[in-house]
Each structure stands twice: as C-alpha cells, then as structure tokens.
Length: 524
Image (tube, rainbow, N blue to C red):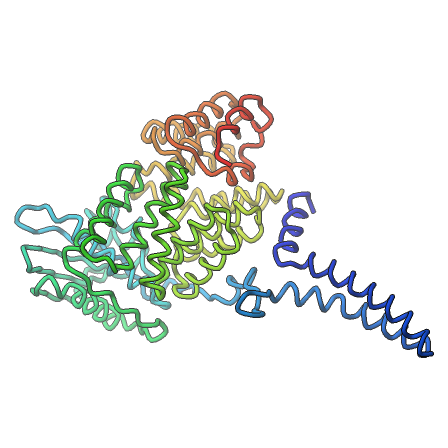
C-alpha cells in the first residue's frame, strides 16, 4: 500500500469522524476507568467487576468505530452516512445487446425561413432527455446522436454507428403561434416504419406534444416506464421556452462564447418566466462551467451558488438544480454539501451522467481518489460512449500506482475516443484527451499529432490547453508543458487549483522553478 492510498484511507476516516470518535472514546474510557477504580475501592466492589468493565470497554471500541463509519450526526438527527453507499444502493441496469435501444436525432427544420434549427434541436433534446431516464431502455447520448455525420446517415449507418435498434427522426415547422411536427420511429436493421404521427397544434401545447411522442415511443417499443416517478414538465410561456431551447443548443457547444450566449438566453427566458426552475438550473450551469473551465472568478462562483439555490427553490424535485448546486459547492470547496447535492440528484435521477461525473471530479479535488474511481466507473456505464470518465480513471489508477489497471482502462478509453472521432473527426476534446492516452500506451507519433491538432483548433479552451500541459509533462517536454500551462492561466483563464495539486500528470514538472512561479498566480 503506497502513501497515496494511506492518505486516502486516513482522509476517509477523518471525513466520517471515525478518528474523532476514537479519540473521544479513549478519553471517556480512561475517565471511566479512573472513576470506577476509585469508586469500587470506596464501596468495596469485588475486583472482577473492574475486569468486566475493562472487557466491556475493549469490546465497545470497535463497535463505536463501526457506528461512526456508518452513521453521522446532523442537525436533523442521526442518519446513515451516505459516503461510500450511493454506488451500491443505486442500481444501473446493463441492458443486453438484444434489449431495446434508441437514437433520437435532431429534428429537421422545415420552416419557411430555415431559422429554427435551435428549436428543432432543443425539442429533440427534451424528448431524448426524458426517454433516457427510463430504466430498461438504452438511449444514445446527445453527444453522439446530434453529430452532423449521424444526421446525414441512413438508418443502417445510424444503427451501426450508435449501436441502436431504432431511431426517432422528425421534422418541425414553427410559424407564429403554430407548430407542425412530424415524427417517425424506424427500425435501423431494415428501415421498417414502426410508428409515425403528425402534429399541428398551437405552440402553447408543445409540452403535451412532447409527452405524446414519448408515450407512443415507449408503447411501440414495449417498454414500461412504471419504475420512473412522473415529473410533469412545467408549462411556461412559449416565448420563454423558445429562449430556453435556444440556450440549450448554445450551451451544448461547450465553448466560451457559446456559454456566454447561452447564459444571456436563459436570463431572457427567466425575465419572461421568473419561476422557470429549469432555466434557473441551466443558468447556474453556465456559471459553474465558466468557473471550472474558463474563468475561476469570485463573481462566477457567487452567481453559480445564487442561481442554483433559486433553481432548487423552484424545482426541488428535479435532478439538475442539485447537480448545479453540487458543482458550485465543489468549486467553493464545501465538499460535504457537494456530496449531499450530488447524491440527491442521483436519488432523483439515477441515470444522470452529469451527477455521477461531476461527483467524481469533486472527489478528485477532495483527494478521495478511490471514491472518485467508483463514481467515474458508474458514469462510464451510464454513458457508454463517453471517453472522459474512462480516461480520468486511467489517470487516477496511475496516481494510485496500479499500472495494470491504468493500462486496461486506457485501452478502453482509446476505443471510445476512436468511436467519437468516427462521428466527428474534429472533436477537439476527443483528440486532446485521446492524445495522452495514446502516449501512455507508447503510440507517441499519433499522440503528438492528435494533441497538436487539438491545441491549434482550440487555442482559447482552457481545458484543452491544460491537457496540453499534462501531455507534454508526461512526454518529458518540460518547457512545452510549462508554455501550455502558462497560456492556460494568462491568456485563456485559470483552472482549478485543487485539481492541479492532485494531478499526477504534472509530477514531472512540479519541482521546476517556473512551475512554482506559475502556481503562485492560481487563486487560493
């Protein structure tokens, strides 16, 4: 067992208050023995009674430690400590290959002016997000099914690329206060039309249309949703919903400018509909993402906390407000509160990838690497096409000195990266993270090519630039690594200090004088 593992075990003991209970128990026991010895002599109590007391104290010590590990004292009373339990008590089924599977593609904009792409995309995303919560149905993620190469593919190619049996395609035309939507559910093996429908209704009925489509899809696929709690959509002003869908479309692009644009759209939606809980949660995401990836300022942190708090007030039964709050608490280094929020989100929506993924990132920042591994593993199961949660596992296994396991998950991560690049050869995050995965496996030439392309394509993306520093640190190119890190800090926006301090990829340059000078500029 190495020092890092011992440190992680000690951290868990402290976090669960086991150390505090042990010290308190020993002090109390010594006092009890002292008082008992004096009292027994005064009252002539037989000596064997003191021996029984000592035995009871010794037997009680491990019991007290176990109780301290399992339970915690809160303002609401004694409760079972959730730390370490959420992975075991929250089941995520592994749907067999012959089980029901679906890809929801962005709806085609057939409006007169061709300017409603964002609405069509957002509408499909809403349907996808609702269907992916169904326990016994596998739904391809938005990241995969919304790629342009998939949209242009025929049904057989969609089935092959996304490994799904069915696809949901649609067309949408929005004109004034009317909306016309046509949908088709297609068998990807032979193109059989399983179900189709046309909707021509007032725009204010858009939520009813979505629910009708979802119900019809589940019925056609013979998938029951009785295990899912019913959470009806909040019916809001159509103008606010239009802005909300536009914001979702921008936010999904994951760039600095699109993040800011999405924030403006969510704010406009809230101006029209102040009690729109999901818009508040999405607004909180934009601030949390800005703090994590683009600009770790006090303003972004304060706004992330404020807006997520408002989201929880308006929509406490949805997972997203709790995820956004968990991100804000993590950035504020309030890890206990972050854990509570992430676990509440998982309780509400066990298949919420963001909840599992950002919970894992929070544990990395906290220094609890074994726990982070479990959370990333669950995230990778929930979204089988995600490469980030797998490659981050490889990094943590390396930190824990488990090279064989690190190599195994690295190979799995590279396979996922190649699948992502097949869908989008310009996926900078895939190129970026895949580069140092290839480097770990000795494929240096391809690795450097991937990294170089990602850095050139995204010069203002802080995470890509930071990963460049990690890559060149591992490659032994010290000055190049320091250049990337400095560029990330000075020209792009800083990254999280706690993550940097626990990142083993930086170990090769950590003692360099220039590194120490750069790190001084990171916020405490």
